[in-house]
Length: 340
Image (cartoon, rainbow, N blue to C red; front, side, top):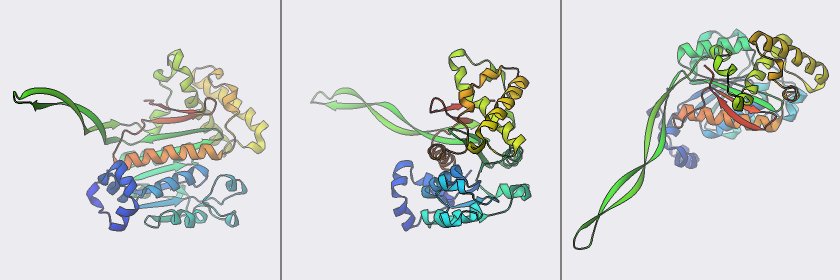
């Protein structure tokens, strides 16, 4: 948890963040200015998230990516100059990221997360992991859960996207309007009139979160969802198919190999649904057809949602999503599902 009194705003910071202070309050902005974030993965989604949290005014962010940028990055990764395509993603993103807000300390780490000791992930208030294998996500989440470090993972596959949050026991405050009676005296007889006025109060609450490993289990709650809500679970099962594809192929489905990859997706859908005890029709073909490469507008949408959730978490203002958010590629809307 980040305490508000850990960081006093300078006059320049107060001027720069004046609009945000009016929006979510001085204490929330102080918490942001005391917060450090680790961002793993600097593809399109990572770039969008990076932009948003830097502009929000956190203390520091570490950009970690051990891969070199490709020509495909030029279509959705706006932090990398075209002349630096082919160089390390994190290093190439540094200059433009820093220029977004000189008051934020932007650091670069080009080492693989597989080489990082567990203690490394405990150095941050929030860890955000993108473009990672399931094994990497489970390992990092386990470390963060034990150390009480807030954990997010997210990805974009074509027109589909998801994010997951494990905030352990998260305390937050939410403003609510409460009505109260006010007595007024009028005239010589001092007649009392009852009036009502609304005042804002902050109500504190605590949410309990589960680990990614537990949340990916197919519970009876998910399997027996009422028919009118059953369609809402399709993105959850689609995620399991995509994670299976990434594990077996070592990459995401690509537009350049669409025909072959679509057949592989159908194969993995069949095996995943069989293991769960559900029909393969649970994930219709139209969903499988929408998950190729990364799509810039979807990166922007999910990057905005992800940043907003992290800002709520760090500022402790507003109720964060618990625990999955999915962007449905067929219906073009977002949905929150709590599993486990």
